[in-house]
Length: 474
Image: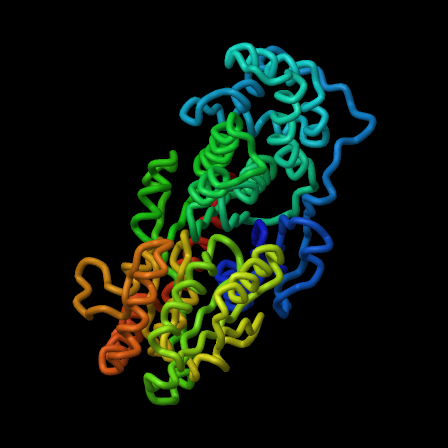
């Protein structure tokens, strides 16, 4: 079997939870040939692999969004009345009204000239009609180029050559999902869609907070990503999520419930037996750790503010932050500036390291994210018997406190998002109660053993690959 894994902004260039999960799949299924179809930002930012590529990964094909540009000359595209209606449906219709089959057929027919459609008379007329309907006060040319800016990356990536495969596996919706949908439709092969976080909701949060999207266009961008998700949900044969709340969000966003499958992340607990060799740290020498990418969605600044409060009460506390500092250099610099402004000592950014080598030194782990799915870093820390203080995002509460039927107890403390005082209070409580910390560490290990097995996760995806791969046509 040949599987094309479609990734956006992660594997093999950016380390982290989703990329580690992809590496696990490729390494485990040695009898499967993989093609990686990666969507990256620029050649300067994503030029080096972050992983040793398994031998059964036969090809890595990368599309760089930084390479996109409007051609000075273009092919004149004249759409029929029916095709114009499909294009208008894509650009203007609400998510619930999307003609997803018509859109995929339009993409199939004009795949080599998709960028030229944006310069066509039909696209111009559709945008003019919408401009007049909205009664916009903007200059029309500005309005038109905003719409072209939304749809150009979409058209650009879909005009690329499609890798041949027996099964397409997109690891998010968004651009990866529409790439998988297009490949599945054109090549008549099945599509498997897996979501670790709910991409549409994450983009919505990004757009609302962004400065690069003008106010009037925020809703248009949000609806654009909802449309991409809707198309992928409809084209996919199966849609996986990590936990029940994510599945419910998928259904709410238009995924047919009968397609959904919950497959939690999993780790091999035996790999972490050596990661908890020292006794619990004393109040005078207590080491806190965090495994994350230094990017805004991880809200490192709240963690730094919380640690500053901890230091005022527990002067001997230390903080080690493990993970990529180069993905968002501007944010990393802001974090360093905040540390300097606070005057907080004993904060160490270790960069990309072998986390297992550092876990024996960690007494407590922190997670300060404003959005998560089911973080692998949390499962790995729990497997090493390290308690957590984590924000109430994604499945973090379920991981630490258990779901229905789980009576093991708490493996950590859950705190509100963006609340440095609550996080600091929880950390201080843990430092002052080593007996509680040891108990939470044991509970975390037991929960991972019982509910989050790597072997079970791999068996579930193997079954999906086999079942979908046996389909003759998507």
